[in-house]
Length: 296
Image (cartoon, rainbow, N blue to C red):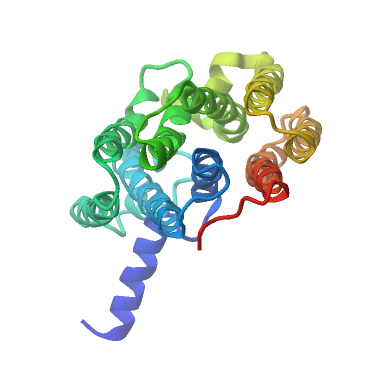
């Protein structure tokens, strides 16, 4: 196999894993970092942070491959996804399965450096990632299931640093579920016409003309839970400034999606990276003002 052929295969695998579209990795990473920082009381060990950061990238990539394997027959009929490597046949199912297996094994190898509870939770996380694509066949709001799958780094982060998952960890997961319903409904609004035609179920279809209201209610529920978490932890100005910045961005999303223009909805979805980042910045600043910084 010559260099050009190898380069072409690697490029296809990169697209299969969505390494060219990092937004999904960031939407997994931010809530994981929220949990790691809170569980570590602002001083998470550097090696734990790196395990979760790299593990997030690996599992998001594996999840994309598994998703495309499950949806290859549908993706070929959706405008936004018809050029994906599996949908076009540029990558075989056998190749995709091998790529997914390598990614999952690499992620599992990282988790083995953590405690037993975190290893056990990683098995649950894999189950969630592998089964999520199939919820679109029967579940009216698969985005809620996605929120659990995308947020499972939260209980894993608490388990890794405290040996348990407190109620606070599950509250953060609940906030992430509402966030996922909001941003993935925006994403689903882009594909709604194609999804109706091919029979896939999404929150954008389920909510119908209440889709914009549902997005904003979900954002509101997320902020309310995070505000409660902040009060419970005794957080002050920096944390709530982060929530206020996130709220302002959510209003911007409302302005984008209220007309239901496909590209504007997609812009709103992508902009959620900054929502997660603003909340993390608030947590970081809160602990920083207390003199708590990571143990690097």
